[in-house]
Length: 107
Image 1 (cartoon, rainbow, N blue to C red):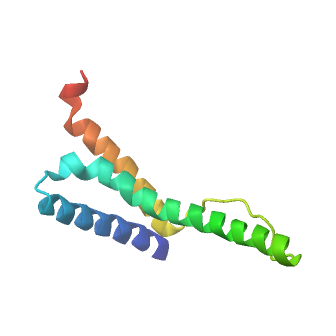
Image 2 (cartoon, rainbow, N blue to C red):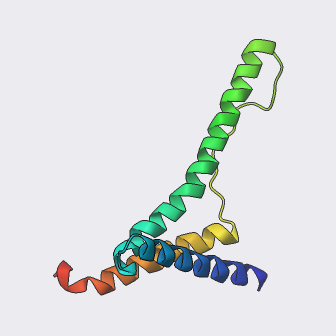
């Protein structure tokens, strides 16, 4: 139950954030919804990816300079926490809403 609440709160916060940004730049929410949701997904994903890359570079550098094993090279594994699940679910729902809203342009 707690995870479902976190997913819903994540989606509500994303909606509020995208709505506020769309008002700030004078766009309609539907024009900004899907691209904004992709951007909100890319920010934490890239942060986690580059954090792993930097840690691996540090470990390799420390091994080369000192000879000590500082943990080795780790693979980047994307994990679905409740927050990331809410972000991905919001991205999928925004894609569906965008396709539904602009359906006549796809025909």
